[in-house]
Image (cartoon, rainbow, N blue to C red; front, side, top):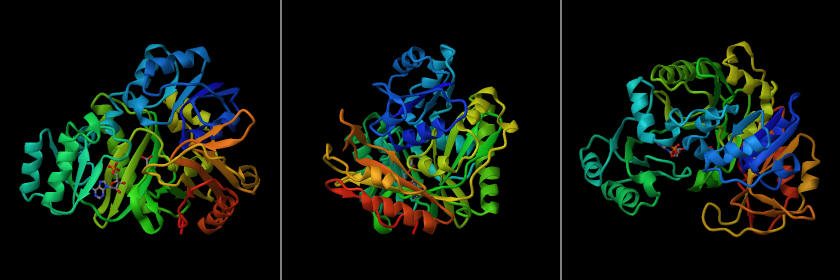
Length: 421
Ligand code: AMP
Ligand code: GLY
């Protein structure tokens, strides 16, 4: 099978790595890919925001299957475009991907179907938002979210009325998130532990993946600004059986069934971003794809052939394929450019990669690297590497991951020291 992976980060490197282990793989392509990915797949330049260009690429490389990493092509209709051309692809249609592409749509969908989430209101104007803030319906802190895609940055937590009004102005008047801020969701603040629950679905049935935890803040002890994710862990026992069952019964199944009933059966990977509150699990967000860096800790635990899972999704046969997961722990430490998520410089040579990669049970997923003609690697993004290790326990995996990190060096590198602690 010839397989094309869309995207260019650590998540996509993990997808390429998992596909490369498949019995059925013949040739791997990645568009656009990155330096690390180019060691395992042929990288093809591409603009991931253009579904028709990506479909042209899939035709040119005669891909038997396309897997999509990021949300943008999904929300822009890559799956619809591929379907029109009878090109096999795993992912939700643009209509189904609205669960990620529009927070207002997702919240109203959850409200219609009794899926537990924070109390909220949708506002189409500054006036409506100000009224909602003044109404006293919500206590502070109050959460204000841009409706559309904002690269994970569209959520502002506000502490008093002036703060909240400023957030509304920033999103709706100054348009700091562009047209993503044409509408807003205002919602109650939830406290608890956050966790990521991913699942495969063919639209009718679902197969849960093991729970994962993402470390979103830039600095140790969950301090500093939000990032795309500074590390992740997945391990047996991260979530107890009863809670996993509750999430399946009260959130995952109702979502899949309601999407089908509303006429947009959801196929592909569904990401549930959850807050585990004292009152039970609540949905913070849906994503239409694997998480990054969650993919880097979940895919290494998948014993079943990933391409077989994808085939089962395409054929609507997921119910007949029991998934097998390894019961080891996986820890991923993201090594970032100094300054990320703010301003940072790129182009620094990365030293020690080969040595780090030779450590047992260690795999390094590249997120933002470029390979030079003479085979060296340079930094090319905010998140640079996802240094990932397995172990019998989280402690063992963490120990290995940090041992590997200690061998890697580039100018101004930054990473958290408390992933999995
Ligand atoms: P989202 O993009 O909706 O997942 O939001 C990004 C981050 O903002 C989440 O991972 C949470 O840490 C935080 N967040 C979002 N919604 C809420 C909420 N209702 N209460 C508390 N924190 C939230
Ligand atoms: N790690 C969070 C996300 O992928 O959205």
